Image (tube, rainbow, N blue to C red; front, side, top):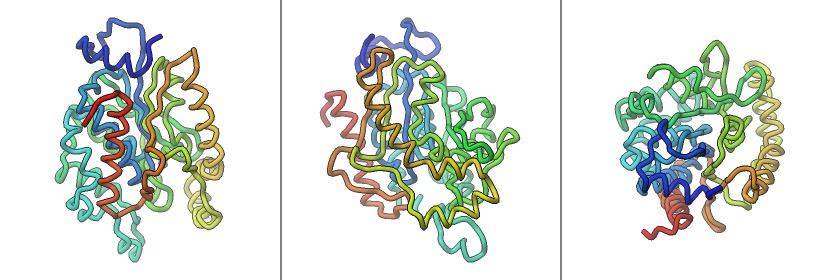
Amino acid sequence: MPSVEDLIVSRRDAGSVAGARDDEWRVALAIEGGGNRAAYSAGMALALDELGLTGSFDAVYGTSGGALNAAWLLTGEAQTWLPSWASPDVAAAGVTDPRRLLCGGPLVDLNVLIHGVYEHLTPMDFTAILANPVTLHLLATDARTGEAADLAPYITDQASLQTALRATACMPLLAGRPVRLGGRSWLDGGLAEAVPYRTALDQGATHVLVLRTRREDQSRSGSAVERALLAPYFAAFGRGAGRSHGAGHVTYREDDERLRELETSNQVRLTQVRPPSGAHDVSRLSSDLDSISAAIAVGRTAVRLLLNVEG
C-alpha cells in the first residue's frame, strides 16, 4: 500500500480525477479547526493547493474552522482566499464583536461571516463547491445526542451549504443558539470530533492526510470556569453536546494516541501534519493579525517540508 504522500503526488502527476480513478484507494483530507487557530490548517491547505494536490483527494473532511478551510479548498480559489484569515478587511467586518453582548447578541456572529463576508467581501464560490467531484464533509455535533455527524446528506444547494458551514462552527454560547438543519440542532463539530479522521475512516478511507492545528505538546482542556459558564447554555440547548464538551479533553487525548497508532498501521495509511515544536499559540478568538498571518506561513511550510518541496 503506497504512503499518503506518494499516492497524492502520483495521482497529481497522472492527472487522476475524483470519481474516475484508476486505482483502488480512497484518499481523504481531514482538517482540524479551533477558531482562529485554524490559520495553521489554512496554511497547510494553501500549500496543498499551490502544489496542485487538491484534486488528489476523494473527500475532504473539516471541523469548525477546519471546515471553512475545507470549503475554500474546493472553490478553486483557495490561493486567493485562504490567506484572508489574516485580512484586516475581514477583521473589520465584525464577525467577532463584544458590543453585541450588550444587546443580547452573540459574540461571534456566523451570519456576518457566512452571509456577509463570504458573499461580498471574500466571495466564496458555493456553486463550485457543490459541483466539485471531491466531496465536502462538514462535521457538526448533534446538540441533543452529543454525537458527531457528517452534514453532507443535508447539503443540496447553496442555502443548505451555508447553513452547514454555520452549524459546524457554532461555538456554544459564543455563537448563539444551535443551528437548525435537517430537523436537528447542531453545534461546533469540535465538541464531538475535533480531528475529523474517525468519520473519514468509517466512510471507507484507505489513506488520510490529517492537518492539525495544535502542536504535539498542546492539549485540549476546558477550565472549571468555562464549564460553569457553559452549563446553563447546554442545559437549555443541548445536554448531549454538554456531555461531549465535558469529555472533550479526554477524547482529544485518546485521539492523539489513536492517531499515533494509525501512523504505523498496516491497515490504513495515515499521515499527520502539525505545527512544529516552538510554534506560537493562536487563541480561538485571537485578533492579532500578525500572529494569524505567521501561523498561515508556518502551516504552509510544514506541508512543503513533508513533501520535500522548497519555498
